[in-house]
Image (tube, rainbow, N blue to C red):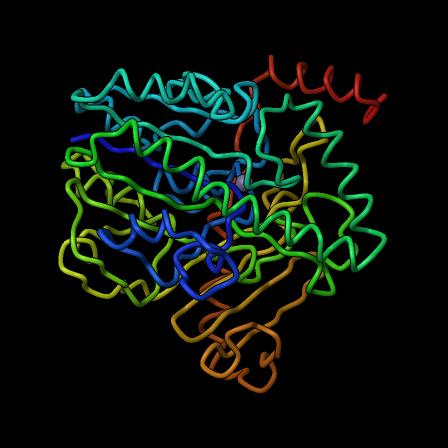
Amino acid sequence: MSLVIVVADSVRADMLGRPGGSTRTPFFDGLAAHGTLFERVVSSAPWTVPSIAAMLTGVYAHRLGLAKWEQPWPEGRPSLFDLAAGAGLEVGSFVFDTGHLFRNVPVARVRGSSQDVPALLSWLEARRGREFVAFVHHWWTHVPYVSRPMTSPVWRKVTDALMATLAKSETARVKARELYRMAVERFSEQWLPRLVDTLDLDTTWLVVTADHGESFGTRPETAALKDVFDLHGNTLHKEMLEVPLLVRPPGGGPARRVPGLARTVDLMPTLADLLGLKPVPTDLDGASLARCVRFGEPAAASEAISVMNRDFVDLPDLPDDPLDLWSGISLATPSRKLIWKLRPDERRAYDLTTDPGETTDVSERDAALLTPLWQRLETELGRAIVGKVLPGDAERIRARLRKLGYIE
Ligand SMILES: [Zn+2]
């Protein structure tokens, strides 16, 4: 059996797999008619690098310590790629820019850019009838929501131009949301069918998910919308953390809609379970959802932990102290959501049974009830680490930032 994982960047849970919602995605819905769609899936972090690493290792982002594109993944944390390679499956990844995601993750076996659609499709086409694991990071749902190949400098320019308009007017924000919606629809209706067309769906597990969501200045802390980090990165509310997740078995299966709480860290142990990949590490944060896929059982996680980091993408170094790297941590349970911002300390809690949109802080009202949950977050924060930056890369990052005028 083969496995193809498609991660559509920045696609919020309510943008895919919710017929009657704001998007029209009949092709994706057709795939979901023969697969398992999870109703609530929480990502480990609100931006790409920490989120994808957590998804593929089954370990929460704060225990991996990654906040820069150039960082190698921590040793001793085998990923789904390691397990697949160990089972003799060919591995191939397609990322938006080969100098960014997986730059120092050789086991991901980056084959090229997902933006070079003909090359991606011919790689997949050539593997029909063979066993392989492909990871495809779809980039065109990310701001600026343009579905054509762009180098990273061009991407930066187009994005900066869009962000400048967002800061100015509500009309521009409405327009950006519309561009976002159209990008998600193009992903479903134009890009995905071409990809699926190259696959032998009778022998391939197909997973479609996202790394994090997107926000358009609807919270006070993101209202300024100055940088990409305001769209996703700097809060732990549901619009930034909750993502779609479809698992379609080879040959298709019954349409399952799985209620309950699932997490993107569950994906690695789930796929290892479904494909029979071993050995699955015993100290993962994620747990297998295979029974949800096979028998339609509810997802039964009791909690999901997520973290956000200060934005270090345009800085040369990382701090030594984990509490200088991670700026907030959250806990989601089936009925509660706690968001703890560090330095300065600010704690908010939401009762999801009456307030699914996370708008009314009940941290004082429910103080007694919440105490063990805050303690749970303190314990989790005690496990946070700062990952490495390779010495050669530290210099390379410095040179790049100097060239861009970020540092002297
Ligand atoms: Zn992303």
